[in-house]
Image 1 (cartoon, rainbow, N blue to C red):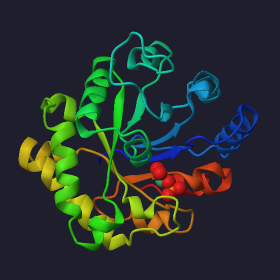
Image 2: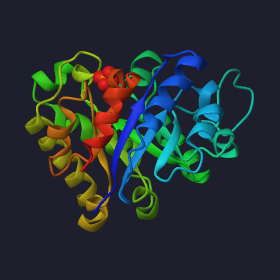
Image 3: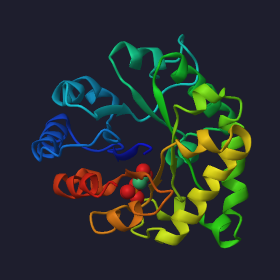
Amino acid sequence: MRKQIAAANWKMNLTAQQAETLLNDVLQANIQLSDNQEAIFAVPFPYLVMTSKLVGERSNYFIAAQNCYHQPSGAFTGEVSAEMLKSIGIKYCVVGHSERREYFDETNAQLAEKINLLFKNDITPIFCCGEPLSVREAEGQNAYVEKQIQESLFHLSADELGRLVIAYEPIWAIGTGKTASTAQAQDIQQFVRSVIAKKYGADLASNIPILYGGSVKANNAAELFASEDVDGGLVGGASLVAKDFVEIIKALK
Ligand code: PGA
C-alpha cells in the first residue's frame, strides 16, 4: 500500500514555546503509525532543530521545512538552501505552496529548480498544486493543475518522481473553512495520478502519495482520506490544535 501522510503546515504561526507545547502534546498521544503511515510537521525555519530533537527517533514521524531557495548558495540574504536543510537532517520540504506562489511570485520554473536542489540533497519535496476559485468556477481546474505539474515536475527522472509527494490544494479551500467535497477531491486527485501515469507509467503513478489540503479538519479527515486517491492531508489551521491534529493522524488509512 502506498504511503499515507498527515502533514501539518504550521505556516508563520507559534512562538518557540507554543511550538514545543503543541508538538509535545501531539507526540504524547503516542499514536503508533503503521509502516505505510507518516506524520510530518512543516515548521518555521527557527524551530527545525528544536522540533527534530523532540521527535527524535520515533519511527515515521518527521520534521519538514516549509520552503527553500531555488539557488544552491550565495549572496541571497535571508534565504535558506536545500543543502542547509540537509545538514541539519531534514528529510522533507514543502514546495510551491499557493501562499508562496501568490505572495512571493514563485513560478513553476523556479519550483522545478527547488525540486532539483532538494533531490540533490536527498530531501523529499512535498509539491503543492491547485487552482484558484475563478479557474474552478470556469471548470478549468484539470488543465490548470496539469500545467503546474508539467512545468515543475516533468523534467524529473522516473527515479526522482517516484520519491515525490504531491499535495493538491484548491486555493479556494485554504483557510476558508470551505473544504472540497470528497467527490471533488477524489476526481481531481485521480486526474493528477493519471497525468503522472501518462508520462511515467501507471505503476509509478500508483505509488505516489497525493495529499489533499484545504480546510481539512478533525471532523472531515476520515471521509476525505477514505477516497482511493486521497492519501492523507496537508493541514494548516487544524494542525495548530493538538487534539485536532491527533484525530487527523488517526484518520489515515
Ligand atoms: P488550511 O491550510 O488547512 O488552514 O486550509 C492548508 C494549507 O494551506 O496547507
